[in-house]
Amino acid sequence: MRSAVVVFVFQLIYIVGIARELHSSGDDAVPIDFMAFWAAAKIALAGNAEQAFSRQTLVSAVSFNGPSGHEWLYPPLFHLVVTPFGLTSFPVAFGLFSAIAFGIFVAALRVWRPERLTFAVTAPPVLFVLVTGNVSLLWGGGLLAALRLRARPVLAGAIIGLLTIKPQLGILLPIALLFGRYWALTAWSAAWSLVLAGLALAVFGWGYGDAFLNELRMTSADFAADERRTRTMISVYAFLRQSGVGHNTALTVQLAAGLAAAAVVARTWSGGRPLEAKIAILCLATLLATPYAFQYELVLAVLAAVFMPRLAPVWLLPVPGWLIGGLDIADYAAPLLAVALCVACFGNSRDGPAAPVRPGRSEDHANGPVIPTA
Figure (tube, rainbow, N blue to C red):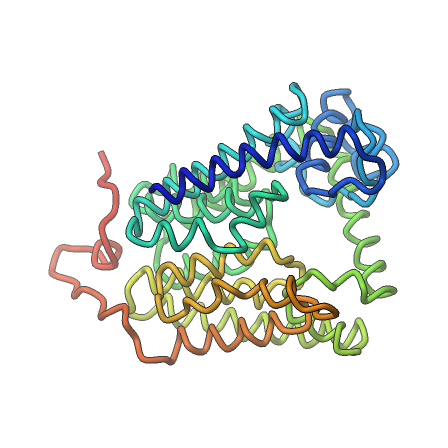
C-alpha cells in the first residue's frame, strides 16, 4: 500500500509539472492522451460533440498552446463519460481523472491480490498510463470489479457495459462469459451495453454514430498508407507492418491470430482452471486478438502477471523500446505476448488446481470467493 501512496504522490507532482509545461510551451509541449479527452469534453459542453472528430476543432478547443498531434477516436459512451471533466481547468480535470482511475485500479487489486499490489502499481505500463492520462487503468480495474461481482449479474453487467468505452479491449469478454457459463451475466452485459450506447447517442445525436464510423474508416486508410503509425502499437498487425508486410496481409494474419486467441479463451474458460488463471489468459489473449492496441494497453499484461507470477517478465515489456534507440515496441511486443500466452496455457502451473465443485454449489463459487448476493 505504501508503494501505491508513493506512486500517487508522484502523479500529483507530475500533474503540476505537466500543467506548467503545457502553459509555457508551444508545439514542443509534451502530448498526453488526456489533453484530447479534455478538449473533447469542452466541445461536447459547447453543444456539438461530433466536432471532436475534427482534429483542427479538437486542438482549438484547448485553451493553451499544446501539441497538435491529437485525435479523437472513441465511441459516444466514452465521450459522455469524460464530458464532466470539461467543466474545470485542465490540471484539476487531469488530477480528478487520474485519481478516479488509479483508485479503482488499486481498489480492485486489493480485493483480488493485495500481496501483489506493489508489483502492479510500480509496473512501467502502469506508470506510463498515469503519466499520459489514458483510460487503461480504469478499464482494467473495471474488468476486475465486474468479475469479482459476477454473482450479482445486474451490477456486474452494468460495469461491463461501461467497459464499452474502449470496445476493442472487450473483444473476447463475451466468449469468456459464454464458455464460462455465466448466462445471466452475459445477458445483462449485452443489455447494459445496448442501453448505455443508446443513452449516449440520445444525448449527442444519432449523427455522432455516423461520424464515429467514418473516423474509423479514415483511420484504417491512414494505417494502410503509413506503417509508421503503428510504431507505438503492440498488436500482431503492428508487428507485421513494422516488418514490411502489407496492410491487407497484416489484417488477414491479425484475424487468424484473433480467432486463435478466441479459441484459447473458449477452451480455458470452459475448463476447470482457477478463475484467476482464466483472467490472466483472457488479458493476454485480448492483446493478441485486437488489431488496435497501444503500449498503454499493457496494463492488461500486468494484470496477467499479477495472477500468474511466472509471467513476471512482462512487467518490463515496454522498457527495451524506451531505452534502445531505433527499437519500437511494435518490433517485439506481439511475439513476446504470444510467448507469454503459451507459458500461461502450457507452462508449469503455480496457480494450483481449481477447487472441486461440491453438490449444491455452483461452478462460480468453486472458482473463488464472490461477494454474496442479497
